[in-house]
Image 1 (cartoon, rainbow, N blue to C red):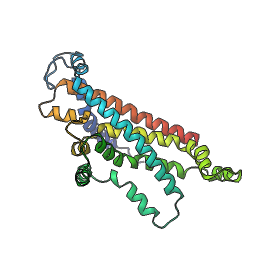
Image 2: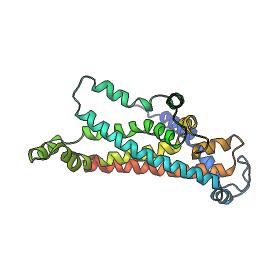
Image 3: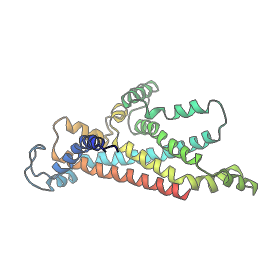
Image 4: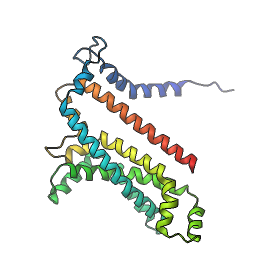
Length: 260
């Protein structure tokens, strides 16, 4: 009889500690009463009060929320239509086209940012919210595309066929049969797109304008002058919001699978 070893569990524990211990320290020191993030001087909500009085931070937050909302809506429309069209396509080029559709999430963001910057400069499009929306939408579309495509594969084709036998056209079949069944996947993709847009720094730096500042860029610029507990407080709140969005996306996806 083989003896069970605890080496895999020990290794997994080390990996998890390396990943989440720094995040835990950021959250803990956001409640530090002192200004230095490396010296604990007592529990306090002082830096959360400072954060909520910072008008520049909330302006950047408003820009990020607007950007993420527009991005996830556009990604939902384009990604859903692309997934439905690709699902119905019967062509030898279907495989390569699906691969190309997911390419933006495989390319390093710094390369995407440089490509977008060169492209917008070439067409003389002013840098600002419009270029941010285009750049964020481009790398968020694959998240919606992949989730909707996976949901379409698991759908019962007999439902659409029965609707066509009863006289429904393709548009009616889509809105009455297909769309309700893939809605959980669309919502999951939108939530992931929202979270990815809110967290993006690299692409935003390349395509933003001087008059538009997003929250991640604001944090990055302040970190250059040293990390203060105010930044720790802001990062803690962003971490909580992103975690809630990801958990909500996973819950919606699981409910959609059960419904299917």
